[in-house]
Amino acid sequence: MGSTGIGPFERFIETLRLLYPLMHTHLECERVTDVGLLYHWKGENPALAKTPVVLMAHFDVAPVVNPDAWTHPPFSGMIADDRVWGRGAFDDKGCLVAICEAVESLLTRGFTPERDIYLCFGGNEETRGDAAATMAETLRDRGIRPYLVLDEGGAVVDAPLPKVNAQAAMVGVGEKGVMTIKLTCEGHPGQIFAPSRRTPIARIGGAVARVTSRTFPARLPSAVPAMIAALAPHASGSARPLYSMLARVPFTAAQFFARLGGHAASLAATTVAPTQIEAGTTSDHLPTNASAILNVRIAVGRTVDSTLSLIKRRIADPGVTITIIDSSNPCAESPIDNPQFAAIRAAVDASYPGVVTAPYVMSAATDSRHFADFADAVYRFSPLKLSSEQRPTIHGPDEWVDLDSLHRGQVFQEHLLRSTAG
Ligand SMILES: [Zn+2]
Image (cartoon, rainbow, N blue to C red; front, side, top):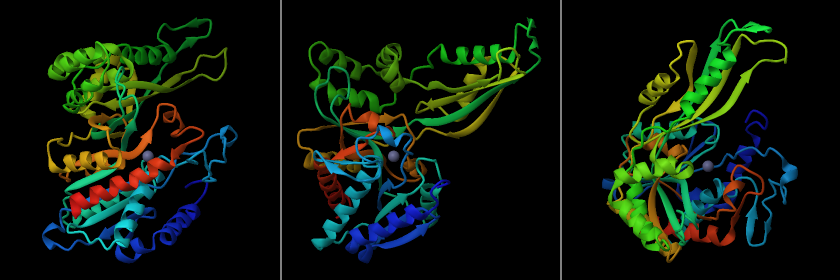
């Protein structure tokens, strides 16, 4: 927004009007903040008006850092090789158009919902802006308690776990908290020829090392054993009995994943990633201060406060000041044994036949977190195929979405709306 102003956002909103005329006739569209679009599709049954279905997506995108690295110009929307290329093609305009296409298509066929439906499109998700938060607050203030909220999140992936050779629709049922903290240390570093043993750089280095050298206590969200159980039958060789066993003993599974490290460990515990470190300007001068930034993903079941005190205890240096730059608590898990989750599974079966639906917990924050404490069920799933080669293109160069996925995404959303609001 800082570099482009609101112009491109307004043009996008105008384009939506042109592309989806029925949606803009039958649904009421309210602007909430500069870049929040809240569409309301009134249902026939007044008894279901306060427990609507909320479909979410965002229309802002991550920046393009190096346009030269792209095969097709990043904002061209080029269609080639059965794919749409461009920044935001997958994250998250692919999901957004799947929703709009579904609504337009349902309206074309004369569908009227029983239950109220809201479309909640935010324009500042990537910058952790306030559009979605304000829309959620607006609905809450009106006494609305969503029956179902669906936002971007997991996708239809081809290798959900090592040794599992099946496609799986990964549905985020909870999300980790995200916290950014800054460690700073100021002090007398001594002279360059007689440095103190505890210079600010040494103390910050030590603090970062102490926080990151050990894993955090493992605790498996209940979605993870359910995910393993869903995927185990599709595992090959000795992985099958191993997964079946782990699904039954969550405590052992938590320890097992924590020990594996990397992705697996992130399922089971809080993670801390040092992302920036700063001190000194020249090679022959001792700086009097040093700082580091840590990006923390807080496990479901923990809190910002409990995580911060654990980090403080590990740093164990009163000379290192810890400041929170931003933070959000994890979102508790939504159930997987309710009609809402069953409706998602059925919509996956209809749009991606043969694909297994599995719950998991997301390690990133989504706009849906603002609904977590007053909606009955919140899920995070982008009904689009996402291959392993495609994954780095999200927020990186050459982002794309395949045409077949966009069509299936529309089928998914139509099916979901018919079954939950029809
Ligand atoms: Zn996104």
